[in-house]
Length: 208
Image (cartoon, rainbow, N blue to C red; front, side, top):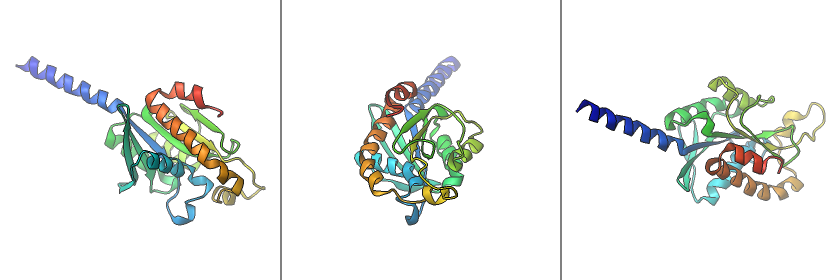
């Protein structure tokens, strides 16, 4: 009977692992609070908000963040907006990775990037924090730079000494007019990441 029990246990573990591989944690970085809602630094929040709205799901307050979930072609996407403020984003990411048993390869972190022109997209499998405090904390907490990230360009059109005001400032009219189209592309990227994988997604969308 022992070998039968072991066989059943092995099968159960295998099935659980296969199920876990179908789950993806999509993290939009941002700051909570009404004063930050429409700022450039909150583009991660805006992207996952758009995805949730189009998937007809709502965010619910949970531990260390707000969570929304939906499924597409056998993949479960868990959308996370950390409520820890940007500088402590890693705490929320680590908690939900552990809670849902999601490997770092199935995590996609969406963030703003000053080093890219407005609306430019760059998806990478790993990399430095680039001076971004949210990525810096995630790297610290996870103890690795090897996790997928989706950088959304906000440009660097600010005068010397005005970086903080620019990043925490709101989009101008020209940028705002172009955001809806960029949100649509961002949704395609997130779903491609879950369905086609990171490499295919990078090849299809980087620079667009």
